[in-house]
Length: 320
Image 1 (cartoon, rainbow, N blue to C red):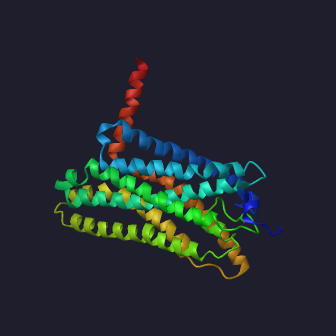
Image 2 (tube, rainbow, N blue to C red; image 1 turned 90 degrees about the vertical axis):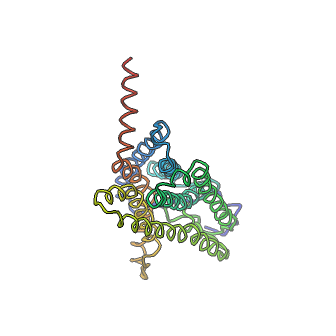
Image 3 (cartoon, rainbow, N blue to C red; image 1 turned 30 degrees about the vertical axis):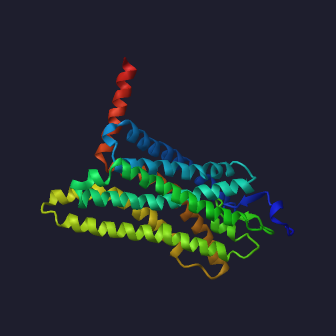
């Protein structure tokens, strides 16, 4: 491809698993199934959180936000990802790439902050139960959730605008399933040091700080639980935060594995690493949002009861 300027780059080619056609059919079926589970599972969480008055609490308000976030995150990339298996033209427009990059970055940053807000909610519920209604009032948890969305959106707008203003004067093939920002930056033919610095700062704010906040919260939570005299009391207290802790471990564990593992030095090893990176990215982008509602619903009696109540109401109303 000849040298061109940024204005001539009207689309990007998403390489995906083009080099492994034998895997494409398998991944199409798997991803389609998981996407449907994501829409169904997270949709149910949102519906029951809104419709059942017993679930109008800070914890379920945050959970419904998390479910809506997972739907938005996957819907920004999975439909295009699935359609790429059905056509030989695996492209995305320049503006479409920017929109996809913005949404994925915004949802990821928002989830980091939102999970830390949920950890604070569990901290107050277990360590200060008598003051919980005062501290976690509607005037508190609604701004906390709104602040998470605003912070994620502002950060994503900054990172995306810096990336899309770069000149792309060479290869326009993105070696990824989606317009992942690191994959796009590799195609720029200009100095990306500002982008790197801004992303390092953003990672400190949206990854390191929330992780430390969650860790400190759970240190106090576990300390409080261990001081409960009865084993039954300890079990009930831990069950109130076990689902959130599981989601946090899966979410941050996948991110750390993606960016902390060593890179291969030889070309053959590097090719294998690239395929592994794509699969891990797929796990992070699809499997994690699919597991979230399953973890919360399977371990939560309130959610199960709310689903049964809504189904029973539908049955009775339908029978009249």
